[in-house]
Length: 78
Image 1 (tube, rainbow, N blue to C red):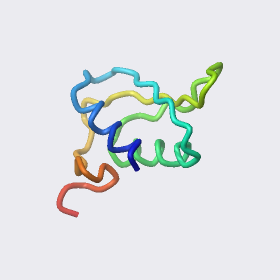
Image 2: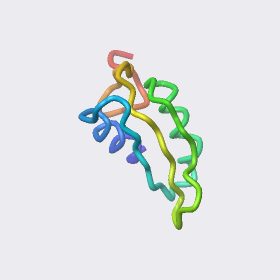
Image 3: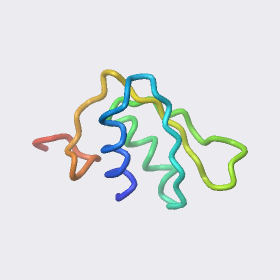
Image 4: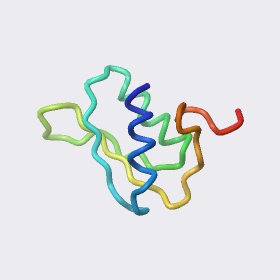
């Protein structure tokens, strides 16, 4: 969960189209990241090959759906 909270804060100030590489050793990351991208509208680009540590890529969307900053897997008011 901490990964998603940090990621939500990071992408908030980035320009649309920016590609973000996330290094995550959490075993849930391969499931959580695509799900979070689906919920928020940021395109999930998948694992980044050739890295020493598990790395995943996503692209910042200019039309991302807002999420609760303290619980970025939940929309505000839900």
